Amino acid sequence: MKVIRGLVPARFLVMMSHLIIVITIFISLDSTVTACLPASSLDAQFSSERTTLIVALSLTLVMFLIELVGFIIGFSMFNASQSLLSIAAHAGASVALSFYLFDMWSCNLYWYIFGFCSALPALTELAVIFGVCFFKKGL
Picture 1 (cartoon, rainbow, N blue to C red):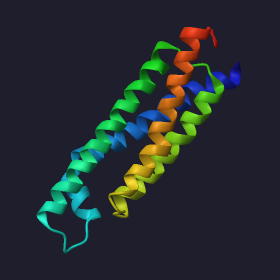
Picture 2: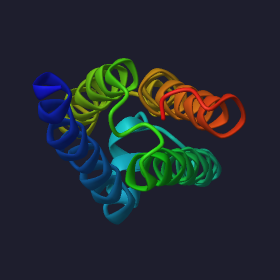
Picture 3: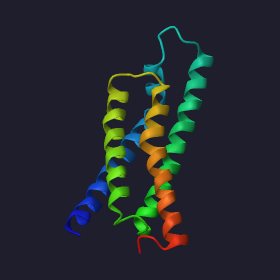
Picture 4: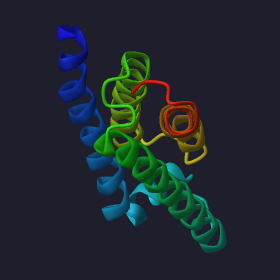
């Protein structure tokens, strides 16, 4: 039980670091889109990429909401496998998004980071919530 107690604060801190980086990208949205486009891009391409990034960031926030609700309510707080997956995914996202911001990666790479580091833990969180609610697993 001691190991699981150590996972709870680590999971929360790593999730918050990922959330802070996503909010930072939201705040600097125009400069992020400008950095990930080639210098010869058109205004239509800029607005298209901006809209795409807004959708991706909004979906990321929805996935955070799903994961935070399951975590805070306690459905998966002491589930070691979900905690380890969440810690690994959000730590990876924090590192990858830091490089995304500073190295000016392509805008399309955000979707890969989203899929592996936001959608995957949120889907497994939904599976844990479903298991706890309907099959009484984990209580």
